[in-house]
Image (cartoon, rainbow, N blue to C red; front, side, top):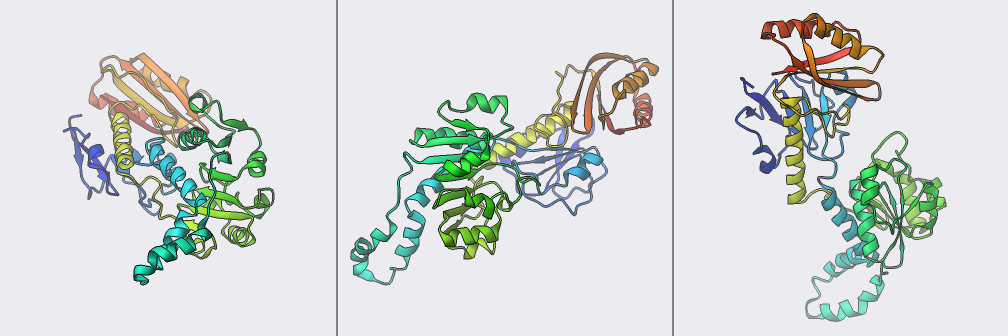
Length: 394
């Protein structure tokens, strides 16, 4: 790259990630027109995308803060970092599972009310501790909904803690399936999780299908006094229905990493201030993964872990490379190669991958062509109906 590529951050990003940017990059938090953006939870929905913007890298898994449809329409690839914070979330889920089961949260709050009792504190503690008798998790049934990077880790470790684990995930990947303990019983109907589990933890994205999936109808089929852990998204739970279920004893505890005004007033709710991925190691891992993916795309056009483009990659051997993002419609590749032929360019290597209504094509080129001709090539490609974005990497 002859000119430095500008990268802008919208949140505080771990220096271990940003330090990966080479001398070919300029990190500028105030840049008006960067080629790349790295962020965590910054809300981009009201933001106008800069004209030069090619990629957004989210240092984390959730991308609800990014307008994906608009990014896709403008040919901007959006990355996330699945699995980078999985261990941090897993540890907090298991910590909360055990601490809530043993009534540790309630016990701590009660002990703090004794601060003015002086020398009587030890005696009062012994007299009052019986109200916080809890239950062990060993031998109990944990239902894990979503067996991705986090859910699979939770399930595997819960098995090691002596729990009977049932998991539900109709879209589990082959890699996750291989990593899942054979002791985890997979079920094909989520109702089975609701009916059998003493504890339920959810690790699924928020979609139209999953929004408020924990509601009065699902609570009806659950065991009385079930504990529900939500370290995914607050909107997966219908707050008013949860409040009633807690008051009725249908739900024994609701542990959520997404507190709001309603959860703070719920009986037996344990609100955690969104600490799931808040560990030093997690923030570093997410930043490193996000920056590497961003650099790989800007330098080679290769894509891994995009949420709106298909994953696609070719080994980069120094050829001039064409990338094209277009509608997934018939004869797009044929039209692209026809244009290349008119410019007397041969194809050294090529891949084409689709994702939903769109596709991404990577082509390594052979042939003599100057920069001015490349501009003409891109202009010609953009006249193809259904073409959204092209880029030449030299």
